[in-house]
Image 1 (spheres, each protein chain N blue to C red):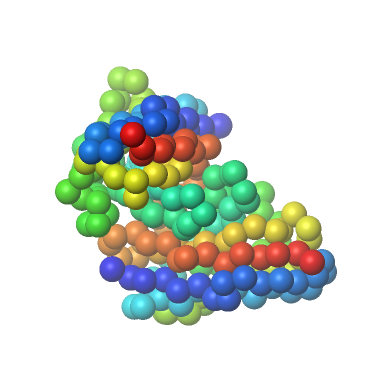
Image 2 (cartoon, rainbow over the protein chains, first blue to last red):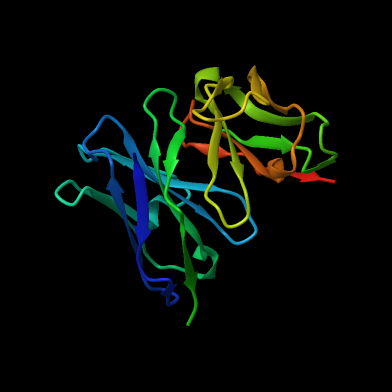
Length: 119
Length: 108
């Protein structure tokens, strides 16, 4: 059974860097899937951040590309997200998810973690 | 990028009624890359439909998807109280992947 679990600080100071990890279980992160980050500001809709393949190939949302780094650690079966120069607008629930190769939808999601940007 | 516009913003219906949710794309989307999700408060989104009309594992047949090109529909027949949620469409036929703004379904 595929499971994803986000972890990381729930509070980040403005201008700082948000760092999250997503632990994957039940499947190898080296399987034929992409692994993605999606966020949701409180009371708002879903926003795609980016995705990574185990080979290191990465796609980013152009709206966030200049501030985002996604990486993979195959030895730990996890992938990570860093967002730099954060502001209050980056306050959101951050989800990690698996992207199905068949039709590029998200078939498994983590439970999500709320990250608040505040001093 | 492809903008997905969902309508209506809110749908208020009674149990047993049929809900019809619309997702309109700013450019043509390959049907293979259009999905629908259900999200309840405090929960992660749940995949309902992928490839425009294929139901995900464990999804009741009350949920159905249709459409092509720029117009897609999610139908929920025989609404039940637990169908109260926000529903999102998503496309990845063209990069970057995008989501619609969501339709809230309220059960009277």
